[in-house]
Length: 339
Image 1 (tube, one colour):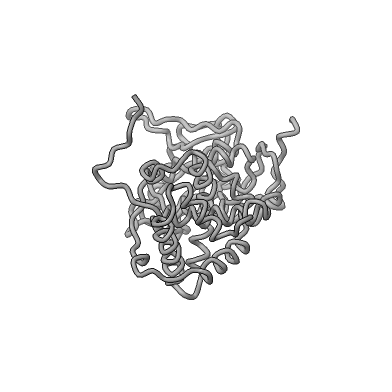
Image 2 (image 1 turned 90 degrees about the vertical axis):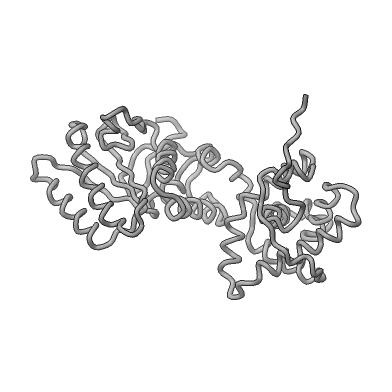
């Protein structure tokens, strides 16, 4: 075992302990990083279904277990009730992304029994079976689960160690991954390390206090992925916008937690107001962005520490993403391709 590979400590990791490579322990993550990765997993469990959910889980397991393999479905054989395995097939995973919200417990009950029976039939070396799902595990489902566990207890003909993994278990896995794996799963996440929500709150408060109202600033538009190119923002400032974007889930979570549900729109209107004034007075998109950065974070925000720099970049990126500043892309616009 090399120095990059350790065993999970049972004291902080719930599911079965396996060798997992990592470069830093979970307690080395900053509070912002931990919250960011928790939000990513929560979005996977609540915001996806079916194959999209199953692929997201498989991507995480690929990074968590060095010997994880996800067999591709083949013709009428399907995947043999297996959405991945480790230890040469001794530990088999089945994953179910809920697609039938009205009857999800009924479908999940059928799915768990079908996948388990199929895995027992096709994977004779299996001694451990884990079912991962984002379905709501109501009493009907749990009754079926406990019945299956009893049927495959130590004294049965097919004894199995059975585990049910939910959002919390996947969060624990993600928080224990290596820096390299986290970067692969969530590109751009490195910038979260320097984001400080407290500094962001102070920055936003100071910005709002020093901004006047412009009536046209209340209009909120939709976002476009070609926005930076359409607004002809140069490469350096595009990189700064990208660096600030990963903090958006943290910022949204903070705005959503406030007792005043309209505060986000209030702050957005201040950004729009500043943008409209700067658009009139400044000659280039880079000059507008720099002026916005300075108005948010102060003239020396890049030299005032990583937290102030990241809170400033993140604030501008968040409202750039939500289309409160800069121009939206017309439907008939086509990106110029260099000849």
